[in-house]
Length: 416
Ligand SMILES: [Zn+2]
Ligand SMILES: [Zn+2]
Image (tube, rainbow, N blue to C red; front, side):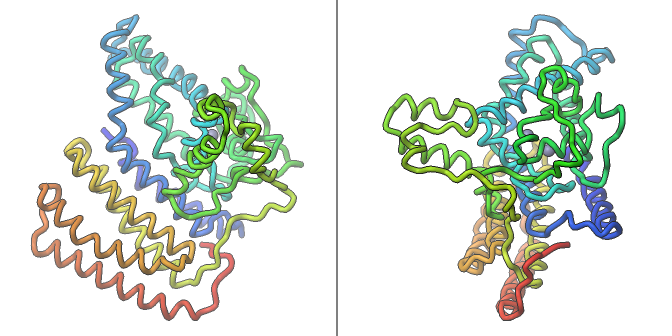
């Protein structure tokens, strides 16, 4: 059972309620481009997850079948409670190392790039976490936690974290001692030096209290959200590659092979001395912090939002197919989602080439859907082809409309 799939309507219901609360209280926690970028990262992560979840599943099941020290049964309630708590302990270390080591941060940074903080930020998930995160959950397999229990507590842990991504809920008294709350997770998303690399728990804050990584949210130190090396882009593919690309560049520039190798596993931010001397990086001055913004006309905002809804529905459809999708079909789905979300990012960034990328995307839909039909992923009858052509035609009309919109004054703060 895919818990995330069933949670999707609740995610959007709660995002709708948060938008209403924003309006009611006169707060501006949402900007359209930022929210679409976060949600795009989420859709991409789920689509890629269809292909990559096998890494975690296979390694976990193999370790459980061959190396488990105990035989725990999924019919015992205590096994579920134990697994839920112990999973969070493993999550703490996965998350902490995800902040403390260069290559692990490259995967996790995606979740932190938003400079806003709202429920859409919660869905801003990495697409490359599968590379290493499985290692941190092997202790559960070694203790004999059955895969079904492991998958369920992992999903519950992830779903729990949704509601803490909001600025509307203040501190929650004694719960701040026990659970991850909106207040202590706001601290986790901060780039203020006082708050950075704190509050790593997924459900329980007790690990942070225990291992001295806890920091309370202070009234005199308002949180500035985001990362110290800003993403400065609305492209969800680049969001997933930015830190890897920086590490790759530094590794190539380093004179010593030892530095080229170890840079990936060194503490986050570590750079080879010769590279840091030749290519210095500015330290951020938070007193002059400005959120990343691209002036965007109202028409382009509406166009990007409508196109995103198409890809959101497509992503949900892919998830709903579950294990029924073949690897080739899932790959095709990922290409379709990746290209579409990239193109929406180009529109949001007002790129010169955005219209050309859109035309390419719409044209590529024809061979992609033809291939999906030929492979038996979709049955493209006359009605389906007509719907695809109608969608293409309406999109072209929208693009033509955007040409008119170009002459309209651009909004500097596109907010919803
Ligand atoms: Zn984090
Ligand atoms: Zn978070």
